[in-house]
Length: 367
Image (cartoon, rainbow, N blue to C red; front, side, top):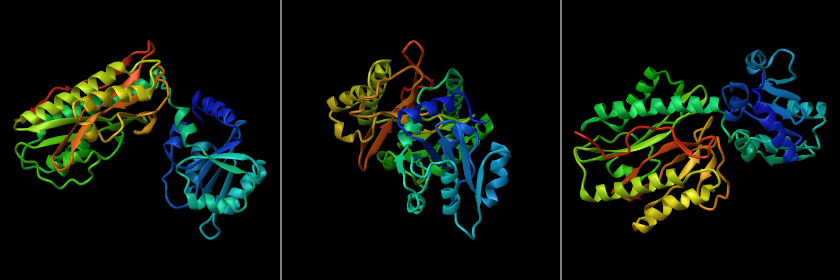
């Protein structure tokens, strides 16, 4: 039912943090343990996982059949209906499992308003378990990494096909739709996130979310995309140039590419996340664009597209074999343009960086 050895690692983390139980709502945390996560809506439901291996599940009546099919009919379930509310079921479960005055961690998918309702009848302490749930899955197995290699290869293939599809006159949305179509044709299980297609002046906004602009001659476009494959994510970014590139754009791209390359090369066992960020940031700072480097250098990736470890300033976490993360320095000049190059790096068993993406980092001009 629960995936081993993942569940054993979680129990160890719970005991280390002195947690008697963890509440995990529908989320990637739950999916990681069960290969399943029910649809999340306003109705409270959650797995209550005890450090000694016990568990119970609080579920709305309309979700019970699906949950029981996954966890087994012999599980402990506390079922509530829309006319009665969920708090009584939660408190009864906590009472039956002797948890009413214990230390309980809570994952990030549980709503604060629900926890406030529960806390009125709970005598123990609730703790933020987000970091624990991220960190216990921070080291990927070889099986995990192989799934990420497949997802990364799909992302590379999408980038390659886009070089033949993009042209002046189509919209950012047209490109998004094409990305979704190609991933589906390649056999991806879905998107890791909604693609970012930022063209022309929109490219100066790292997380630009609209998609109505028409692609024009001499535009540059940031493309940020990724898929899911057997639960694991890919994430890659490239900057394409439509019809040509100016001298200024060429110089900025050269800086971003150098920052990206040097940070990837530096990312090895024994160095900290903050030190990797410092390498990337130093190159951009020295080029006079420190104020235009708006984001952290990277983020961890796996079951979630953003998870630990975070490649950011002042992060003292030391890199270890099996850690997977992005390297994505960028320069964003407000109102003008932005550029980013992003690949996924895994620290291999020898302590060196394995780059999962192979699509070209050279200047790509769409003619």
